[in-house]
Amino acid sequence: MTSPAIHAPSALGLGVARAQIELKQFFRERSSVIFNFSFPVIMLFIFGSVFDGDIAPGVSFTQYFTAGMIASGVFMSSFQELAITIAIEREDGTLKRLRGTPMPPAAYFLGKIGMVLVASVAQAAILLGVGAALFGLDLPSEPELWLRFAWIFLLGTVAGTVLGIAYSSLPRSAKSAGAVVSPVLIVLMFISGVYFVYSELPSWMQTVGALFPLKWLAGGMRSIFLPESFAAEEVGDSWQLPETALVLGLWAVVGLVLCLRTFRWMRRDAG
Figure 1: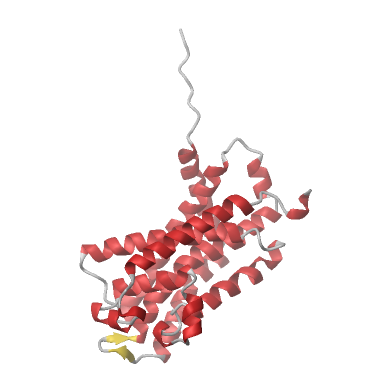
Figure 2: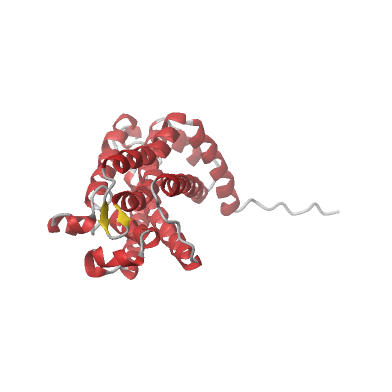
């Protein structure tokens, strides 16, 4: 009698299992969870209370800002969270131990992607609920707009995730990770049309902001949650959706290449 064949679990199956572990670890870090989820909401309350006027007929600054904060939330949950946590895992030896197990490296990265997707969706849902309930954000009723939200959200999450993984190799230590990572995202928020109306920024700032994915992610979110008439207020008098898909896709490819070339399982001084 022959014994049944034993099949090794696939990288995808291991990635799903790893994502469950990553989510448990993420939600156990209460300070990180509170910051990632509350920061966009707090900023929304502050800006919504200070700037309560209209920036265009039928469009308040709060509505504009909410769309931008949804985009920023994606990059907080992907780029910022991964760049910091992976740097910490590298220093405390977690990555070294995982590399010594039979788990394929792809499963580790799939686990990170799964964690980011769940965290980003939860954060976006909170912001949409607060924006709709308290600040007059109009949730779209057309299915095509939710489909647009899906592909823009997914492209932005992928780009932010691979860039965060690649950027995690830059901090020299876990202690310096926050100082090296967070200012980058804060600056991008200012020049990408999150805190200020993008078309009113200085031309040189618009040029710099357009080089990075957050500007396009924020613009894509505005195309979903602001009236169609507001497209005339955007640079180029349109939502620039083809350009948004192209830039976010290019950054996803660039981030993936950087991941493959720069990712390290151990610290530089580990020998």
